[in-house]
Length: 177
View 1: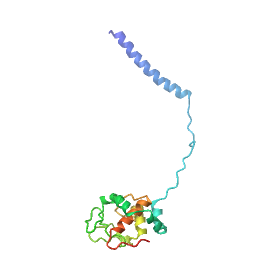
View 2: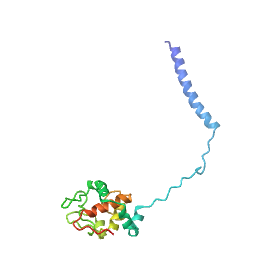
View 3: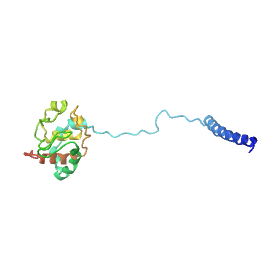
View 4: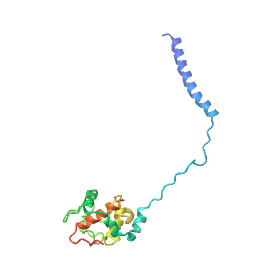
């Protein structure tokens, strides 16, 4: 190949690049697109109940109807999520979280050999069915400052089942309302 042919090839490549970019610039001048000042349609997001709103009104929840949704057997399955941090067996050892055997009916932060967060110690309420329901919706919203980082159980059936299962794991379970 001689130098003249190489020059033709290089010129063709440069010409092609200039044509492609030139067409883009020319079309930008010819077709001017104006962006609308407002969106053509608006998406309305549905109102979402926050866990703090639910947990603050947990006293008004019909706990009898809630517990009717769950079963101990289902609670045992759902509690497997909790077993990564908690033990529910009598005489069990604390893990990341405290032992939960017989927790319903006791005052919060009552396991003597577990280091609770200041918020849970200050909470000072007895773990009733309604209190546990509010806590299980979203622990960090129910007790601000708790070190329990679990997102919570959104399903009413799951919460009811876990509460019934936890209540069954006690020397003196609370009577169902």
